[in-house]
Image (cartoon, rainbow, N blue to C red; front, side):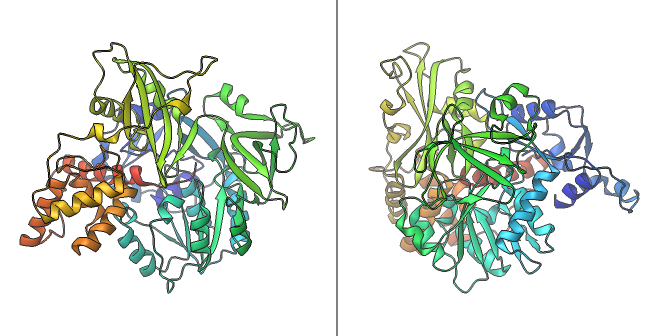
Length: 554
């Protein structure tokens, strides 16, 4: 994939990453929206892609023909204002929107970060983020432009904390940029080579900052896709513990920040306002969305340059007396779940298309500390024909990525309203996750009982039956990491996360453990018997990663 990116950019093109595990409808929209002339993929994935006008190129099967092309450097007329990539983010209208990032944006980012972090050729930078998320561009080009090593990591390793710890130690990773919800589950070896850890894409807790800053240079950074990955960063110090929140810091080089009121007037220090960002990181705008581009990229009232613009982030922030900036939240209904930037309106728009749904609203809840999840509330068109949560989940999976699927669905007779007639989101009830459980079936042996107790504790449920699906009753792969840790303590067995996903209820997990004890766990599984089985294997692994990551920075 890295070779492909270099080839695309050297040829003067721009890349548009597509995740083959996205629903077909979403991929089809992105292909149509971009009108891409060339689609670089793998032969085994070509049959599953929606039809498009793009010319398919599969390096794994077309290499003989590719090798006949000239090996000389191509002549290109690429300019700073040419596109580097188009990254799609969640859109409130029900369709994702493509952000247009130019060469000059990436050049400014990499140059600023190389200087700020003192990156040189001795570094080993982990590509933690998926190519479909813009954080990957900082990780990739920061490494390649500085002569350092870019360390690639498989999905299986990223979703297993024990394997991940061993991997970064083995490969001497020095630079790690990841979301706080992931970092919370990792215990780093002090004897490792990590020089710095960067928390990005979601709020970083004071507790995490204290823990990791004791042994490493630790940074909290901020930046939307529209301003090219990172716009603001903060180096955690001993004084940070005096704050209620970890600041997001100060602007990177060639970046201007303004905290403004609704009239685009600066607010006083310590007074919250909407953060506006200007400077060299500003993207061109949104692909085929001039209306939205005009709304979000506004003329800069503080500049004399005629084309100067500011990006309206929608984030509520305030200046601290020392000049650092503190993040307070959103002024709209956009949320971050495990690092994923999600427009709740996009989920609501898709839910409303279900034939049995009258009205729908989606919110992010954190009823238990450290476990923020999406919850959907809806009213049925016919009171006696309410849709089943399982049907709603499958309906959404055909249209949205896994990380945008709510963990709980609550059926209401009517949505609560404020006195002025708007939906009262604060009055929406806490979901009863036990409602998603099957008829209770008690554990039958010591192993099942131990698993049930651990699941109940992690999921904050009174009891868990042996046929309850972990993901249907509020589980996700971050919580699975806690389950694995608990099972290792109680049963003395280390279970790969991929197995937990394959065996999502206690009955099947218990049978897997028994089979492992009697026959030994297979070192490899024959997913390659047919093209379909290979795609299913990739799909399983990617689904876990989507539920867990991560990643990346939006």
